Amino acid sequence: MQQEGVDLNTRAFRYLWTPLSLAARNGHYAVCRLLLARDVVEPNPRDSGGRTPLSWAAGNGHVNVVELFLSDCRVAPDSRASWFYKGRTPIMWAAANGHTAVVKVLLGTGMVDYGSNDDDGRTILSYAAQHGSSELVKQALARKGIKANWRDQTGRTALSWAAQNGQTAAIEPLLARNDVDPNSTDNSDRTPLSWASQYGHEPVVRML
Image 1 (cartoon, helix red, strand yellow):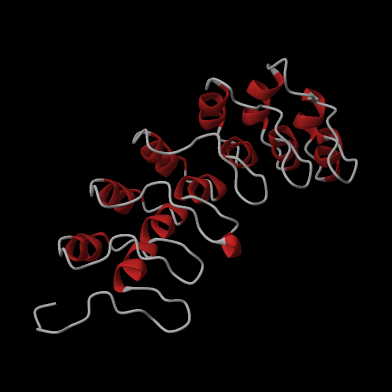
Image 2 (image 1 turned 90 degrees about the vertical axis):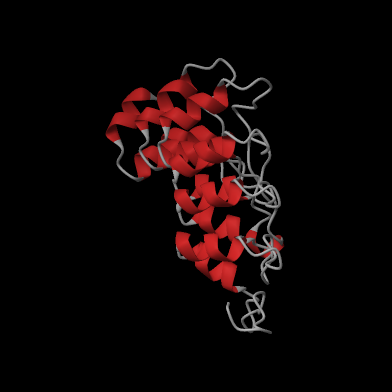
């Protein structure tokens, strides 16, 4: 970076990753900080899949890198990836991969849409339930207007995903809701009980 004429936004062939993108996705905090300190560095470069450095950092659970990006007012915290990556935002990637700490940090900005869904119809509640994050499930359910029984493109609800994965901690607050249907069927006519039974989740079967 001390050499005159070095392109700090150079893009790798095919995937179009910049140095900042690569540093972010691999959790290299010091390198990200160094690059972001340069005004010439683009903070939101989209790769071939429409993902930004923040998206990669969030999806890979690099909470310190996520915090660094969010401290830069130029960074877009709710940018959507392209159709190739299902239109997911950084918080969706974090939720989908079970990175609860990252989800909390992103929510703290007040600049992300908690109720939005990706191209598969999956929501943060859906992903949180799948990974058994009872805290995030409760946070979602406490939000005004939340659709607790929302069905994704496959017809599955948050309860369905939680049941398949044996997530009793996530199932409890869902079942406490009057608007959650425990007998809801997906596009394959399968209920939460059907999924729990297939994978041998006895505690879930008992709860249902």
